[in-house]
Amino acid sequence: MNNLKGTIIKNESNIYTVITEKGKYNAIPRGKFKNQDIIPVVGDRVKLSIENDIAIIEEIMPRNVYIKRPKLANITQIIFVQSSKNPKPDLLLLDKQLAFAEYLKVKSIIILNKIDLDKNKEFKKIKKIYEEIGYKVIETQANENIGIDKLKNELKGNISAFAGNSGVGKSTLINSLFNNIITLEGEISHKNKKGKNTTTKIQIYEIEKNSYIADTPGFSTLDISEIQSKDLDKYFIEFKKYIRECEFIGCTHIKEQNCGIKRAVESGKISIDRYNRFCKIYEELKEKERRKW
Image: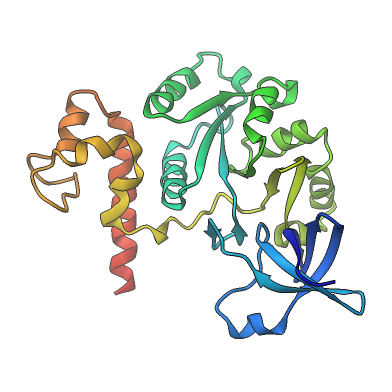
């Protein structure tokens, strides 16, 4: 049986689980990939051949998206989970993640979890800022299943990855979506201190037909250094319409005079907090670029 097409849904110790219309196969890659600058990753669409009851990955179809760390292909959206309290929202991390998603050309959804802990409802201000920019923001209280149905609707027809710092409730959120199927095993292993495989295994789970979510340990550490500092402004989506108002081509929007972005900040059209975080991220990227040389 040749040219069987499928999607890689799991990679553990370089054994790939591929789901096809004929069922699931545990597959190994053809040796030729070692000589090419490409290896199969979870999310790849592939062609298989079956030889002596062994499934072999013969071809990797062109990718729409590729993330280097964790290695993942063809996701269509990233769910960025922030907690409203305990820990407090890390908006610098969120803005880095959103910029990277724009760089990848992947849709972003922001989750503000643990809304019950935020008695002053500070999360409403955060929600307003990001909704005005154009991002979808969903309030959740994962332990009570609040907001879970809204999130489920957004997952339909997508391959979604979840990103969030430790403690934001990402595991509880995924468990709520799956009725405690997925991350429970990882958590038990972790409690028994036998959790080595949970950090090396990348897997996507089918929630319903053509709808998957990725359970990806370490996904908060997206390597934003792939973005060059001079291009960062392209990935702050509310900046786009004001960049053309800058007097100088290649304006960094930090020290220059007659800068369209800075004028938009002064007039309240761009959030000053988002702008200040842009400046921090720009300097971080610039510093990394200096170190390379």
